Image (cartoon, rainbow, N blue to C red):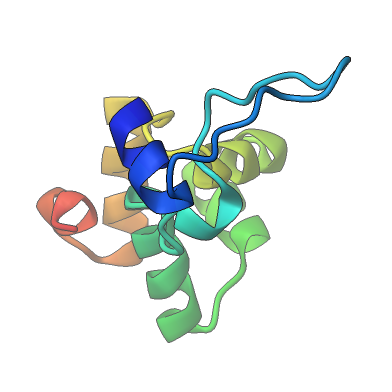
Amino acid sequence: MREELERITGGQLEPPAEGVRKSEYPPLGRRPTSAGVGGEILAQLARMRQTQTWLAEQTGMPIATLSRHLRAPGRFRLEELLAIAYVLGLEPAALLAR
């Protein structure tokens, strides 16, 4: 990782300023836009012209939980994914394909 940063910055790595925490996450620009499963769910909702609120009502999930899981890849439990796939009319594997 350090070698990659040195290659990108031309070896000009500087320590963070006093009081600035180092982030363990990649910069925002490098994160995928679709966020995996959450992105697939949001894409299907858009194709169906439905909302997260609708999906929460159909699956019985609290809207706050659904919204939080959509933003954080890997947070869904298996039974939640199965319920979402069923409501969206998808095979569960279709949510995991990308």
